[in-house]
Each structure stands twice: as structure tokens, then as C-alpha cells.
Image (cartoon, rainbow, N blue to C red; front, side, top):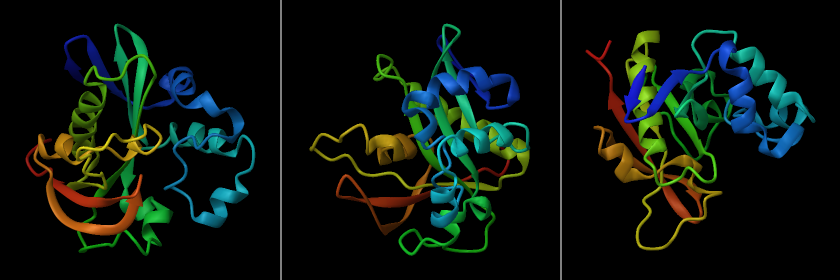
Length: 198
């Protein structure tokens, strides 16, 4: 779908399951498996060991794809999770990241780049792939909720939300500062219109 040098980005479908497991299986059966935002708090807790993995496996069989996978020289190196905000139960119920209007936006909820492959523009390629894929499935706009890195180093555990400059570079604009926090910094609601990108 999207090349950046030797980086290829593809929709996360059932054919990618083995690669998705390589990327998201680091915490085993108790890992998030990109379910934190897709489930209500109570449903997420109820998933139990292995529940997140099984839920994501089912989602790979459905349309739209729940994310994209980045490959560097053929090996899986990154994941970006996204989907219609209306299907992101934790966002639907969020008190800290508001719904700003009735546009049926898609939400970008996470990035994951494998250790050893960071600082190679993998996240930027994943973002390009998400922006390319979403309008083909009817998304009129995408939202993100990144942080402004500033001068202080960001712990990688909190960097999964992305950083404001990366989104600005591809045309996302700031809508508002939310009450949500990551690494003690406010998360910024940003949006990009996708009209004309199909």
C-alpha cells in the first residue's frame, strides 16, 4: 500500500496474523492486543488472559481492518491501531477526550515499533499507511490524540500515542487540548480531513 524506502505498510488482515502476533505478543496472553480503546473498561477487564489476542484475531477477519502493519525488508516491525471512533467504546465513554462534532471520524489509538527498529521513520510510515487506508473504507476524517514531546525525553511506554509534530507534518491540525494525559503531558486532539484521498 505504502512504501517509504524499504518500508511497506499493509492493512492488518487475517493473512497478517502471524506477523501481528510477533508485534503485539510481547506481553503474552495478558497484553493489550490493541483492545484497550476498543472495549469499555468493564469489558476490557472481563477479557481475561488471552481474551485480547482472541478479540484481535476476530477483528482481522472483519472490515475495516483494525490497523496497519509495517514491514522493513519483509519483516514485521510496526503496528498502528485505528478504527471508527464510534466503535472505540472507551473513547465513546471518555470524559477526557471529547467528541467535538458529529463527523464520523476514525481514531488513531496507538503505535508500536519493535525495539531495534526505532528512529527509522517506521511510525511515520505507519501513519501514512493509515491515512491511505482509511478513506478506502469510508473514513471522512481521522483523529489522533498525541502529546507534544517538548524538551523532556518521553518514556517509550507513553509514546504509543504519537507526537504532535509527526501529525502536523502530514496535515493534521490541532482542535483542542484534552484533559487526558500521557507521561504527565496533555494529549492534543488533532484532526485531518481525508476528502479526495480515495
